[in-house]
Length: 278
Length: 282
Image (cartoon, rainbow over all chains, first blue to last red; front, side, top):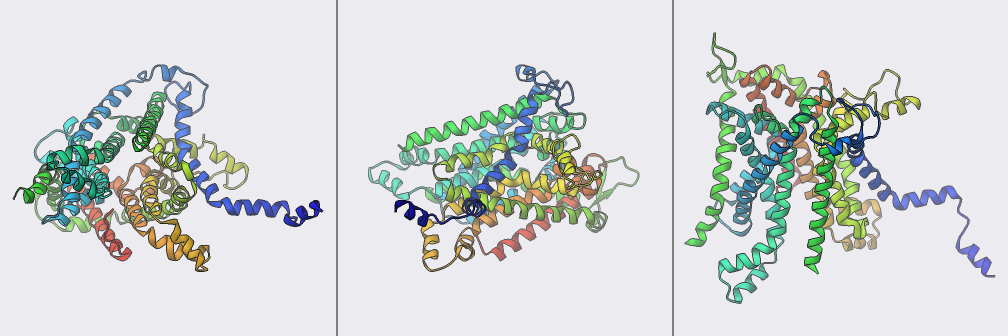
């Protein structure tokens, strides 16, 4: 009897149809899996070839070695380039985060004449192709007979980072509940105290996110840097220049290390955030 | 009185900086674009002659690259949209407690230098990579067909490199959709397709607009993908501007091209935002 009911409740579906149904139900997950594979193929490739016992040109797999990881500065110039990129990235991040956060507070928190013009001025650098930004700055430096190099590159990076900082911080400010600040004021906190004790801590994760974004944009930038850096080598420039004769495996080591470092920072940030919410 | 001044004081340093290093250079670029070479002068010496024909000459000379820039950027944007929309949808609605992890994974490839990843693609798609021999074994491509140095490789590289710019804004707007609106649509006898067309898509429109802009703009001005993955036959406007600056030292033509590119993008973007009907800028 029970056997019969069981049989009735599961009508015999051929295997093919069952697979079809499973695929149909999970189609979007399968799709997402393929998309992630596509995203990670070159990352995995870069990581794998960081272990290649390649000598000078890292094109063909020649055997496994840990030498590249033990000696990441082994290739000439590579660590010098990395150092320049980090220095430029840090300075550009600090300045663009400060300037951008101030603008975000002005636009996000105040109603004033010229607010929409200000929004436009923030949008324009993002709507300008990098090559135009880089080329126009270079022409300006040439007019004033400033040689391209370290500081012109820093200035160029601040220009394109500011807008991204403003957009990120502004979004965080917009999501704040204004009643929290009103409550602080009701409890006799003055304007400055409210800002320091309530507003700023609430916006801080947004500012941190903006700073991380600014640093990664600056660190990875090639086009604008190429126009304004003159003879100075940055990490992306090093890769581009050495691409013609083969990139040393050390570049793959540094690229992979940056990947894991950034991943760690983001994950730790998430954990800290979660604990705070609790 | 103090209250009125506060926003302006906050804006002052940032805008002073942007004025000096963004607006002034653009004005200067406009001036350079109408200069001509000093007769008998050295390379790189130009004088202002207000020669607007520079624009015409530059355009006629490079109309192929111009067209290519916009067509490649358009295809890459559409491909990125087709890949990102289901991905963003899956992360927003189907990922459960792994939502944050998956979101981090979308951005994670970003942190390996984009040049390294582009060169990795070049090697993966190249003769020594695993894709070409596999496709040849199965007879999908012929012995003489290559994948690198083609417009396919350039468009694929651009799609890949700008994908997170598409996925993140899409995710942000899809994630904001209340799943109950989708259930309500189903309760009112809409099938999956109708629900998507009438509810999900309209509600995610701000993300679609932001994502397509953030992809199209850098793609149209890009020259790195074309330089690494392409051939002389896939040169884009960015490649021309770059070589005019560094190899030919022809600043006026480079400036005219840059300005035309920027103007074309701004016009397209304005029309698009009007058409898409959203005032929310990015």
